[in-house]
Length: 202
Image (cartoon, rainbow, N blue to C red; front, top):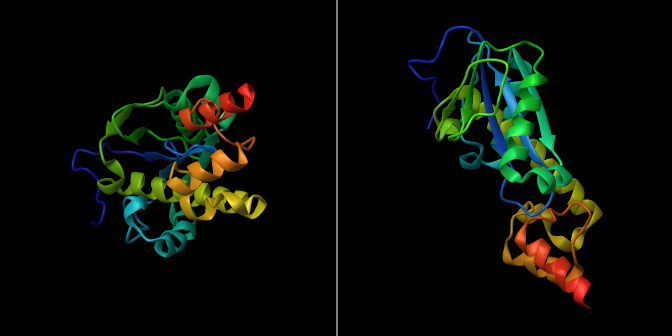
């Protein structure tokens, strides 16, 4: 479905904000903020999970080229472990908005919660499929995080990161059990925490 702006979308510069990577056991949670240019539209924006990897890779440079402003930020596994995944996600979103070269007048956040921002903000459930700017942000965040996982896969090919992208699939859980956690694994997530506990009891 082609994402479209809400009828009630405010005037001025509107930043769409989304995150990727709350569920994986490893790596950063990545957030992006995008202010689209209404005079330079991009066809095919939407929920990054519903768009093929090939299409995401095609849209990625177009978004960067045509948007009025964009920024990708993250929160690290250590920050996730310290803050919890929700607060780390809010932190990554705050960093993404703060990094924009153009200050937004308003922000639309995918989901049902908003981080504290210097501009008015509104949550939009399933916003990545409903608001073009949020869809653009979801694509940037998804491509960036997937590239992190591909880099980790090249360094540690036995874990299968290129295939499961760090999510707790049977393949990932089996590798975690056999090979143990990497420094990039999130210690506070139960499968990792339990595996570390078994190491300590050996």
